[in-house]
Length: 138
Image 1 (spheres, rainbow, N blue to C red):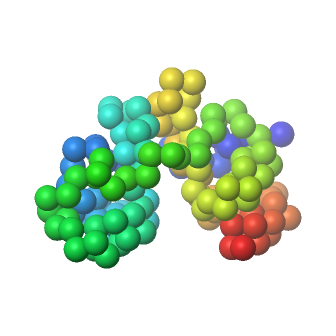
Image 2 (cartoon, one colour):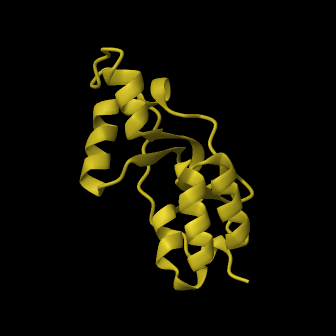
C-alpha cells in the first residue's frame, strides 16, 4: 500500500512566526501558494494562509508590515506522519474538509506537505481523488 511519503512534497517553503505578514504574503506570491507552514527551525508551530491574511489582517484594518505571523496564524493544524497510508490521509482530509495536510515526524518536525493536487496527480487514486474533492468542497 502506498503511503503519504510516496506523494508528498518534501521541499516545503516555511516562515518563522517572528516574520511580518507582509513577508508571508510576498513569499506566498513568489511561490504561487496559498499557505505557508510556520516553523521554528523545522518544528511545526502552525500555518498561515491567504485567508488568515485576508480575514485577520486586511479585513480588520491591521498593517501587514507591523503585524506578525504569530498574531494571525492558525495554530490548530491537522497533521499526519509520513508512513500514513494514502487512503487514511484522504479520509482525514475529507473529514476535516482541508485541502492541505502537513506531514510531520514523531518530533513534530515538518517533513512535507500533501495537497489535494498531489492526490489528483496520482493516477492510481482516481476514486479517492473524486471522493476527496467532493468531501472537501461540501
